[in-house]
Image (cartoon, rainbow, N blue to C red):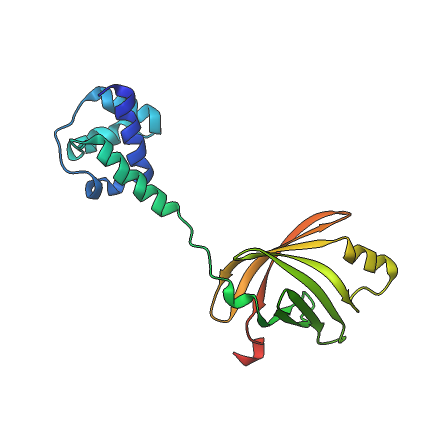
Length: 198
């Protein structure tokens, strides 16, 4: 086994974490100083650490099998389980703006209704689900925009929303606003029940 290949194996192991190496690799008498030098250079860790721990390390008799196990562990560690957003596609939800005003959100069959509980203004949006947890919202009609300029702005703006996390009483998502004057993003919490009812 050449130096480059041995160093690659040790580099892969270091991604899992050297402190966990005893649980992944059985004991061996591998003490090749050339391996230590190559691995230290590749992973940029102290040569003395590898020297102290090399006697407890062992490259399995079947290095390909070892690499499969290690890469599976790495990929599993980086995997992110997406939330199930099925329950958010229909129903009644609650949002609160920076002024603390309660906005009631009714979402059903591709339409979203936003009701400002203070002003009673109601706005309707067309919802297009892009995948399980992302949708695009386009303005349909409503009393939100007060002037022709505001209405034109609403009609030429698309909101892209992505659900990041779902908890028992709320979900967290990021809204990206693509408007004629630019793009902006914000993260906010939408509640499954009113704040004063949980």
